Image (cartoon, rainbow over all chains, first blue to last red; front, side, top):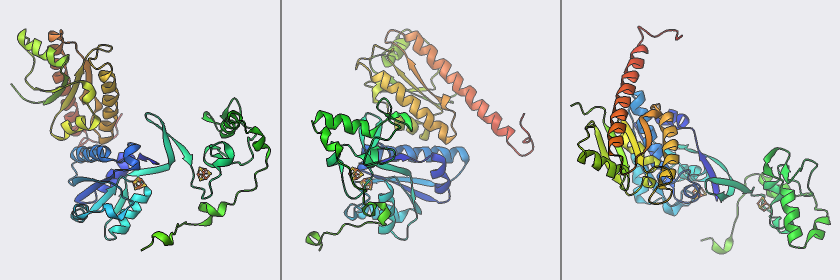
Length: 223
Length: 148
Ligand code: SF4
Ligand code: SF4
């Protein structure tokens, strides 16, 4: 899932207070699962804005609404359109994709991000999310025992480990696992250590962000 | 008697709520400012429930659950502590003194403790409101200046 975190309240407040009616719009998918921008969090931020407005003597109305997904047009139903049009501005509690897509669907509406989008990751334990993929565009985890050297190695090296690996942790921070230790251990367990002898070629980064904004096209499913 | 400050007390059915009932049976006096909301367990509390009480006009909110280790649902009260702590941070972000929200542990048999705790909480909140009014006065243009 896409993992995000809430922006500091002050930042959202400075935006919201400029308008008479602000809609806080949540997303029911990734950001609900990572507890950053679902219905519950929308309720919290809306109430925080109401309380802060009362404290500061500012006067604006805060409305709440959450849809299943903000990155898919079909979920912007009539009720959502009505709520958006009734507002002067929207704070989108989706990931950056949802924020931009909301603005694309409603080009006349001011949409402000309520979250800071962090990474593609997983819930490693209750309350902890960790990065697992950097969307490099050409997945290589198959060669590394299912551990991604791009997103999990601080240097994204393909022929690791580097000299900074110590006691299984990365030199940038002892709390960060060394991806190459994980790769080694996994390959060892799978009885495939010899495959790590292979020299990996330089990765073609043009399939990643370095190649500019990317699109995926499928003629078979196009209308 | 003044109904200000208005206090909402989220009380667990198995302990603090029973204690409140007992306080009544024992004819213990405590201020009528406290409105009790009975919950099946303080583990039912979520941060927004606490914020909502403030939005709806509460001056102070108390959450009262079983003593640590004696929750009817094993660890509902421990979860409540975490959520109250989180809600305190959320309140602080809005500029509201987080001390307006507190968690207490009161066993079913502690009627007098419930009465005492509610009374002290009402007094504390009244004091905080007074402090807020004073600091508001200090900030008025005539008196504002270099703070020492
Ligand atoms: S808008 Fe973002 S958070 Fe919501 S479903 Fe799409 S990708 Fe996930
Ligand atoms: S190799 Fe690329 S696509 Fe595969 S998990 Fe890592 S970053 Fe993601």
